Image (tube, rainbow over all chains, first blue to last red; front, side, top):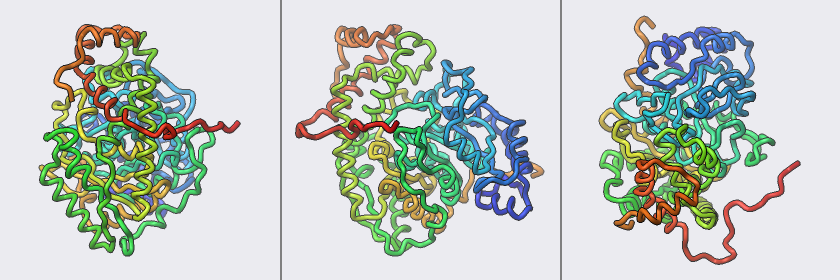
Length: 468
Length: 63
């Protein structure tokens, strides 16, 4: 059997019982990258020799021998880290990102650096030196971003898992469009140290995997206090895998319907209406949660635009502050999308930012109260399949209803899980939890996953290579 | 959302204040997109109690 077809859980069992070696697994992934990535563009750098050398290391931890990818805004010592930009095209950091230190200590093998939107916001941009990644379900379509390459590599079987970052949905959007699992943990749960920042108070680091169980395994290695990350929280880390359960008996799940059923059109216009296939998939997913023993209750929050605009304004202000000097002195270094999107941040005032952050506190309080009576909540993710990659407006970031941004604003753990397909392209919803309750979020996702087969469906390009 | 984009004159002042040197194409693209900034400003600027504090307040850093 082609070992790249295995989940992390299954590959780990095979490595443990001696039927699979980390070297064979790494070679198999490298073979797939060589054969398929010219079409997918999910890697900007492949570390063939380094990966094969690392695969010979003795067992270390829960990820022993598991090949992964890192979004190319994760700094890696002695290994080029571009942030998808001309500005850092030849940048070789002197330090490793904390998350990679933890993954490596757990035994993971780094296959390479995954394509990213420029500084995690500017893309897909065909004016940059790095070709945008393509959706493995249909390469004419967009895989979402900004953790595009990470999601594509996982979905296409070019790594077992990958790391992304999420400021307004950059893990969960790509997970949704690529038909995989993506977790944005609680703000403070996973260290951000060593990741190129986009927006200090909204940035989150998290894993992209094929299954929720694999997500739990990755989180076991990733989660925990980092005293050198000012936002890191000193909160005990539970056994995530032990918390997984196939049933949801007694669970209470809030359903945030009005974001996609009413607010998207009311606040962002008619072309933001969820399509019929998405609404049907979302409703069917809710019924499935009920059939697993959960009790559903509708949650009523402030309109989606209140959350989405506060999130976007804070992001713009913080991102522009980070890049202001380069915008003024070397604007030619930026790609078109990055310059246009973050350039809008130049026109915000200090009072705008403070008002947005005051609104943030109000909405965080509102959301905490809403979750008080439930264990987790579910909400829409992108409410339709991936659009064509050549049809995306530069300012779509600000024009479209964002279902993911609200949970960056609240800092809540949020998991994207596949819930169906339309025209051969995946659909997904989000499971959102209280702060530091990733275990409950993953438990819900795992139960849903065990009762459905959406996660078992893979794009044709993920099939074993001929002869494998 | 307003029908008219910000005027060229007013936007030129904002660009100058920001210290940006834009090509004519960049100027016009950002001018047309400025309506998104205006929408976000309207969205977050609302009547609040004066005691309503921001989400992040100053915290003493650990040594």
